Image (cartoon, rainbow, N blue to C red; front, side, top):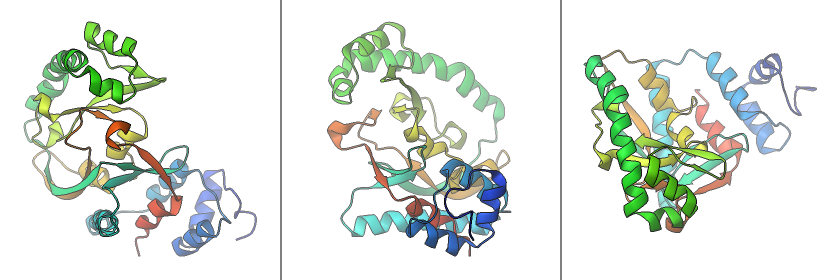
Length: 252
């Protein structure tokens, strides 16, 4: 590898880099001889692979092993996520291993998602703005934003970043619109921790037909906070090396 070592920018360059072998790519990254745009790299990497169920199962297991290694090292629970600024870990998140079964009744799912959820979400946003003001203030929400939430029950915007009401247990896996199943999460790297395209759980779930199931290691936000990030509870992001994430996706 010669001219491709520094910073491959095109799809063709990325394919040529990956063709050198994953071990070589990881070595070059660890030696700071190769930089990549993570999103493009992962897109090209996954598009060029025919991931079977066994491979995705292996990726899920590696994420669980990574979590266990953090726990043994005395580090807080976290999940990894790519971002335009690099790879981050989100403290407080956990990888929860469970059987995900895609809801067979699609009419019920559509009702829960498109009719029931918007109304309950709006009411919940108003409620937390009124009854959990201090939690939101501690999480960095300006009072003016909280007051607006209390009035209109719409997804807030803080520091230019929109927040989304996320289901802790997905609606498509038997989750419901009980507000205990809600968390207000920033729609940036935090939401990508759950729905990022590199996520092996998401890749496995996308293959399911209604009524089918699969074992996954699903990134799950902390149960004891209504909002994420929440620096007051040490639930926030920290930068880690890109290879910490990319090394999981060696399928050999």
